[in-house]
Length: 425
Ligand code: FES
Ligand SMILES: [Fe+2]
Image (cartoon, rainbow, N blue to C red; front, side, top):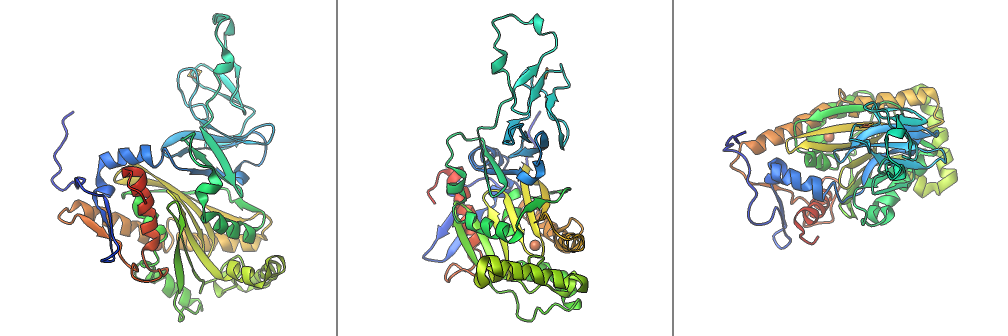
């Protein structure tokens, strides 16, 4: 096959891909990071091969034998609860000759039988069935022919992560300051569960544009104008604006924390949720105050958090709690999966409001997602116009960063740059 010449393709510069000039308050990122197939290949290996990546939530596999299958860092894996109640994550490939063993997105199984030659494996990955076993000689060690567990699996407060790097630091150290924010979300939710069902969509844009967008306070007002108008039309008071801070949490993670002028199912009532849920949300709030004290309860109930756990997990604790992950299928395309998290014992009418609220803003056809997708695809198209080589991310460098500054994105890019090019953060 002959390569076609693309005159607008951004070639990587011989110098840095990410440039930080503190003296002149300038931070810029070379656009080849978003368009180059070579950089895409490098980051699959250096970023996705050496980070902790979100697999799923323990509540998705409550019972022994429950499993979910999904790609993580572009590799086929599945997560299953074994007989002893432990969470296991396996490479989804038969030890015989490679076929994918777990072929459904979710379910419950005592054994996983490969459809190709019918070898079967238990929930610990042990090979427990081989048709015509007598055809094999005595010397063959069937004990060594189990499914291969992923190098590292750890979970934090129900969130299960894997790493393909056996030597990576422990998950808690990796999460750094993000652990405290996960605590806040989980404590406020109580017995949290991922609601069954997902939103899945693809975007014709580089995956790092969504990492940026998910913690980008600057775009909220211009891009999501329609949603804010809708809230005002329902009686929400937005006259105070949306004030807050941006924080780098270490290891590339970052969070925006800001006042919530809109309602939060945990636990701030607004007209959007309807009169019939007013009392219940009030009760939830009183429970939080009793359990965690006034100050922490107020933070849980009245402030929003948009958090990026590097490289590709987003937790939006806003008018609903969204857990979202995404990964590149090429330099120009990503696949996104989003789930909704909620208290397990939530009243049905409140659950309904929460889901409505989730879909209204963050669903694939909601007020936010199509606008964000349009923005990201538009950036990607802009990159391919050529001419301009750099993106500017300097906003807020000369002050304590606010939620609508760009420090949180700079935190992401510093980590990315150190992983991909070896430059110290
Ligand atoms: S490839 Fe799985 S049994 Fe042969
Ligand atoms: Fe947005």
